[in-house]
Length: 383
Image 1 (cartoon, rainbow, N blue to C red):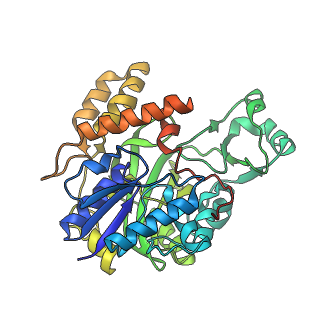
Image 2 (image 1 turned 90 degrees about the horizontal axis):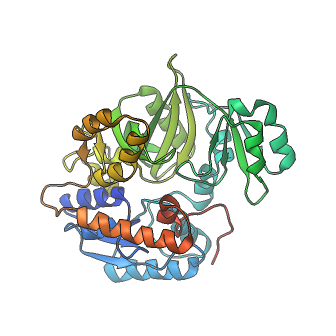
């Protein structure tokens, strides 16, 4: 039996990992800086520990995680959200003794940088669209004549934050790219969006699941999704993780056009929704702990029902698509449900209430409030 510290307990993927590891006979410790992180409510944990915020308090955060590892005898620390950057910086830059399942901080930083990743990702069978770095007004002006063929987004961002898709030239007036807030302009690609989640060790894929987003929170995170099989995605991921000797979780977004061409758009070095297609009998926990591989057995569309109600339903009302929404919603599995565990509805409502309070205090939206304390946007880290 191993003891695994799972961070980012606010995320459904952290809850899923906790259940998989518990069912495989391991001891699970959950942690987050939120008081009411959703996964805290699971029966499949030994304890939940509230950590200090990682952003702007790296040294204190590192000491707290080190203390948890020491006191609970943790064999692995498994990050699930953007706290991975702060944990890796704590390990690599200030020498914290953390048995982290993650690649070096420098590599994490490169794939998180949307321009750098676009350069890294070429040559593996799913080349990204042409990507231009914007660091000042002259860079932006050079894109104005072709703006309606481009997508503009910050180099450091998540959940399609501040993204402009095929904007008019006048819409670019609000952008202020700079060396400290750089942007990229990417050629817009038609087609459907596909995503994938993978686990790798020393450059070899241990598990992978591709999926298709069905509903989104605005332009950002997928609220509902269904599994897909795509060998091009598998070949790309295999080549990329091998070339970078990747260890840990990694996720990608792609465009797949009508001619079958696949283009990678960006990389998220953390857990995403494909993880939910692995059941307790699929061997994923064993792959993480002891090596080897696992293959997902679950099928069908899935969602977090409360998120679909909060984001998907209003969108369906605006788009006059209520009948389709109700039909889809009724056929979706609940990623928060698990045999033998308690209902997560109260935990979700408590977590949502906490995020609403954070949003009110920060005067920001819910999506921004949900990750405000764990975002890393390229600023120097080191103590």
